[in-house]
Length: 78
View 1 (cartoon, rainbow, N blue to C red):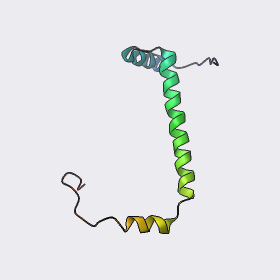
View 2: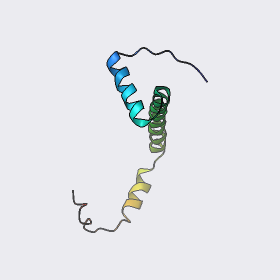
View 3: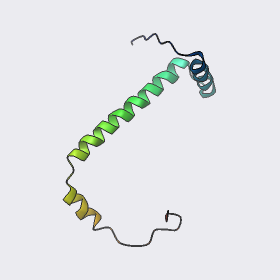
View 4: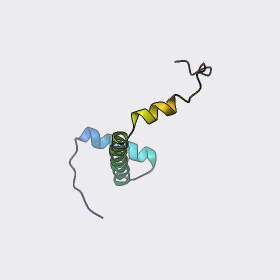
């Protein structure tokens, strides 16, 4: 496991400390989890962009044209 020395403004450190305490985890666990979530989001975005680049618009339109034309369910109008 690697170690990282990080300098943060006191206000951010205070927020991290408060959140970690409220979540019942250590500051290290909170930061590790936050970074993991960010990496996952970035990797997912990259994955979806690559998939979109391979998409065939004509195939997509053919699939969407098979969807029944009906009114939205109540509550889904907006």
